[in-house]
Image 1: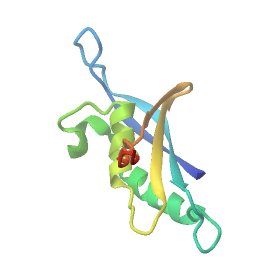
Image 2: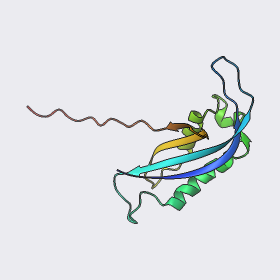
Image 3: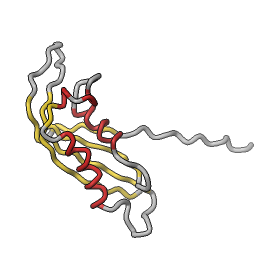
Length: 131
């Protein structure tokens, strides 16, 4: 399996619900998003995906998040914008047409604090071996 990744940064505010039930005041993070693309084969150019295309796709999504209060965005109307939720949001927004599959999206909220989303692998069913 071949895997490549691209990363971009954006600034945005959020506040999440804490274990005691209170909600944090919105505060700003310098978020880093890293997207991993995987494929068992290389394309006709010998790549998993072109880095420039992958960076452009990711930048398009993160530009819409830049300088926003994520709590006020429609995308997070039904859940708090945790790093985990942001990783899933970005994964679901990435184009898939003609690309290697997105195998993982990581979001760094603060140094050493990384959340990720990976789509579940579909289990391949095999027919039982003949006796």
